[in-house]
Length: 370
Ligand code: PLP
Image (cartoon, rainbow, N blue to C red; front, side, top):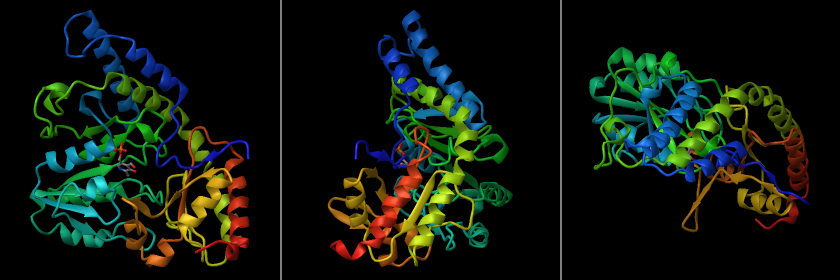
């Protein structure tokens, strides 16, 4: 096969050429954005232009955006910097939320991956004014969207604050942080075609956060350290293009849905996680009964498809996905799941072609080592 079809946008998206140009131009420009002279002011302009673009994408004001080194740092900053002693997190959060607070209490999800609002309400009866609720907007493995507006309503009614990891939602679904009333929102540049290593935490109206970096007073004393000017410049361009491309990404959901239907029809017993509820338009996690995910990944990679597995592999040990387990999947089923995710540079034919390769693999499954 002449080219590999990249279907792993939820891990990282290809960088948009316009973002590469912006990063390159910013790197050629000397200047610390905190300096008063003309060089400094030029660098500051790049940062503030990007801040305005990110604010437009997220339905907020530029002054409420804190640039960070990525989604992981923004999640840590929110959970630690909100300074609430009781933290409620959904069972399907990204590790950067799960590990940011050692004693966080888990909110269960149903079989479709939506959080149990009754359980949340119950948990909010204890010490709500010292509580932070952290629920992601879209899950990185399944794409399932959470009822963020209802979560904010329930939490605010009791005096709790809400953090929302919107890393996998931004650029895939329309977001208006102000209307949703979210107190802290996390986003990451590299999931929307910007460079890696840059992201942001968005503060709600009138809210502050305790900086977790001691040192400089950058980002209005919310995050010390000289800003990553080239990264932020690229992020700004990616945010602008993501907003412009939002309608198209959503229209293309039918390609994902057709692929899923074709695969489910060809592989009896296959499961698409979260198929019955709202999801972002670009994500599928599907099981291939009887074929472990690492076998699928290896064969599909050889055939020219870059997808990822529902199980994370760290230090040589394959871990079963906590997300799929929280949705009721047993270890064997979760271990047969792969994730397919598309984005701005995907061709309309990619998913149909992928479905054919996946179905062909299923049909000859007995030939692969388990
Ligand atoms: N949150 C979610 C839901 C993610 O999918 C990721 C990245 O995989 C992160 C946070 C971390 O973002 P970053 O890679 O920018 O640190």
